[in-house]
Length: 318
Image (cartoon, rainbow, N blue to C red; front, side, top):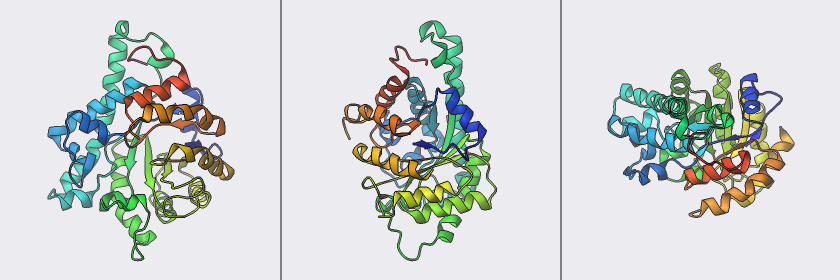
């Protein structure tokens, strides 16, 4: 993910500087929840675990990624929307509570991790750079297609009836809830088209939201997002939004990322550990400064990324 230096908040610049110029984002969430025993065969997907009886699994996955070396952990809110919760029979108030809870659980995990590093340092790595590294909470905002749960976030075709205004109205309340809950960043993920990027940019401006945000696009090749819109044009939308501190890609084949980073910079698998990590040096040289994973990546992937950036990680507390 490329850093938007010119318009980035001093907060995010300082964060990257404290990380040494590059930072590690966490990886796939739903697959890790399933590995820990969660049944996600549901339209809510990973957001299903925000129900109180399963929230401990969410916290556990956050901790796994923190122990693997992540600097940024994303909340379990990718597919969490008021509309989605209501469709499953929850009240609006319950939906609001679960959205807020997604941020609270991530914050709790960060506190637990910091406490472990402080109290149990004899059992963990003594390298102060890792033990005291900065950790941010990013509120995950999935696309409109994620709510539809029909795969449209992977093709970007919402139909002619969906407009920028439709998308702003859909996303507005949950973005405000996540910000008010105390997220450090807003992560707009798997953006499939220019239309939704424009909606996010206008929404942030209209609501006067000051929380730093990043836009991550889902791409089909080195030049275009999955809808066919140019990544250069999509990045231009992000570049026009003063709250956006980084622009990147996710749910995209690693072989396309170097070219995509180059395009973005002009304007402003099962064996993921083997296929993914070797690209980190090349992406970093191309100008990326935030590195993480999404679907099917694991804490081992993130550990590999952290080691590629910081050197060999020997113990859990970094």
